[in-house]
Image (cartoon, rainbow, N blue to C red):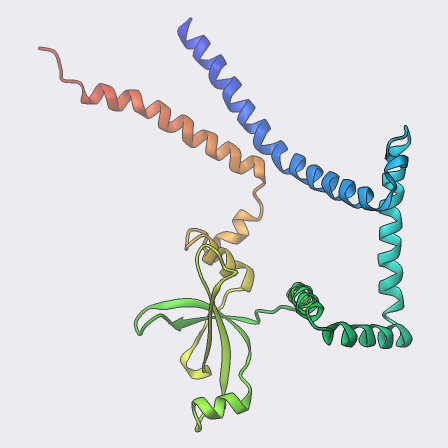
Length: 246
């Protein structure tokens, strides 16, 4: 009877955890979209209209209007006249005191996000950092300007810019300007190298192909099996530690 009760409790616990982990991404995504829709509609639709029975329709209409505005702004700025207007507004805002610092900062963030689509990190390299004999993963971002390269090493114009990220937060790191001859080019892609940095070496590049075929459910089931195996091994270890009766 105790074994049956234990199995039932274990099944309830395991299935509940699996359901929790599987639904968490879906619920989180829906919550974020709900927050965005509510935030946008609250600032566009008058409060009197939101208090009516048709508030849901007004909120959906507000989102449609925002998407339409974004579409037409993008469409207009892609032609000659729209591009000229954008450059004039950009130049104007960049020269207004106080406003220019906020505007420029937000524009740089947008530029950084847009640059990720054009491969900001070009190649993966190993560099001796922070000292000789220790190697860190780095990403080649660009070729160093010749004016800077001549100042650093007058006899060597082949200098490159390398970003060495920190673990486990790769958004911070160290910017290095160094001779190309002192770096070791690695035959792995940027995504695999970034996973290796974030996981502190736990996720290896050659594991990516196998891991790409696994789903969230596969990871959860493997985690549950590890917990069951460790639980089943505990009684055996306890019995082994007990002294034998004579």
